[in-house]
Length: 534
Image (cartoon, rainbow, N blue to C red; front, side, top):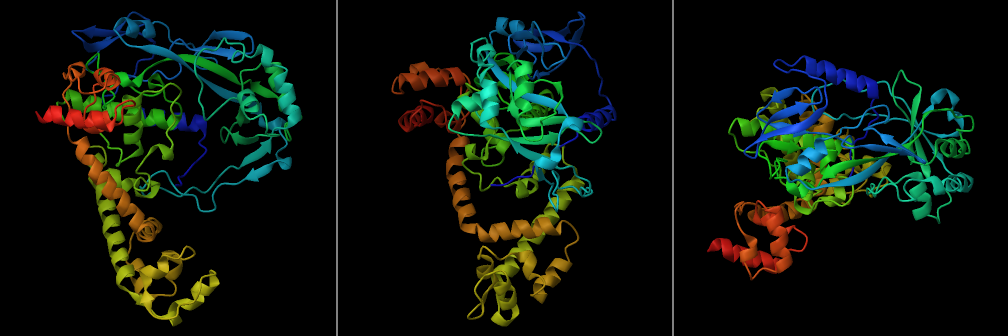
């Protein structure tokens, strides 16, 4: 699998989005801290703020990040905060617990920030941006022209030894931090303990913005005392004279087990109350953004008495993310990996528009113009695939190209699709050698590169894609067998006790979801199918 990645200017990103929000009609802003959720008859009716103001609302979405009773740890120092320099949110967790929600603690960390003027980049390995940068959108936006480089450097055994001198002051090692941290983004002290056989660990040196000297040292997350952090940092190649803006730190915060949510991210306990982001035990910006989108879509649909918007596991990574959270819960900060998706051959970054734009247009998000562009793209991909499958090529027209890419020459006339199955061969490169193919591509008015790439993938990996689609279709029949919220699973004695207990707690929305609950066996599902059949 592959996907695009980009560095974004932190301040410009925030400023740009604030401008976008301020342009929206009927959107009001109020800056304050929410202390209570207002509930009547198990239905949310608004919020109460620290200024003792009540704001009435048909729905409420909580996106509290790491702020709920957030505690920052640096060495032996601990103080309240949701981020360094920003206050934590007090009272809201207690309010939700009083309403019946289960809460627990998690931990995450952030690296030291360094002054770029004190860093020697010349001794590091430069990592330039892409020669042909892609986009995070299928709209006709300008291609990126200016890029900043990142750099790569490494820790050493000497760095590790210095860091170890601070372990006795580490809040993580002495037990002051109770929350579980992210498995796949451990702190530097955690890494040198867990991977003690490694002589070094790589560090990605990333600029924070165009007009900032602030450097983000990716891989050097730490909660050790600031003097130990600085001493160790200065033993790293390129950081010998480094000055820091602020040290790395760990942060502990409250979260709520996501099994308490429906697949719309609405809570089961309180109607019209939605949770999104790190409050649900996830980590990372992408996971938070995805949940915020799903919660807000469904909040709007709910108050307009429309069907909920649910993405399947075979339709989007968002579908996998939400289903994993509400079905399995999480004991550590959850990160979305491609490996979590059983249908990842279908969920390619290059076909996201083909998969999701029609769904988005149907609920009023993607414009008709955007949908037309996707339909056009789909039609051109189809025409291109049909041509490649039907057209036979003679050796004299293509052998020069094949030999140039290290592929054997043809012995006879064969279908172009068979030539394309060779790993060295691409559609784009063959355009110059095959006039009918060139004529087809010359008629394409937009997104030619995207069309060529998607057509090529669909031809090269056709059998794999079809196999996965068939599997998704077979399993989807269970996703469409819906279960009522009021089933008392404890009364179905032919189901194992563990399965009854877990299904009673999670209240799966379908047989498909029930089958993914840990502890529910295929035999339990067979009994459940018989039960609902009766």
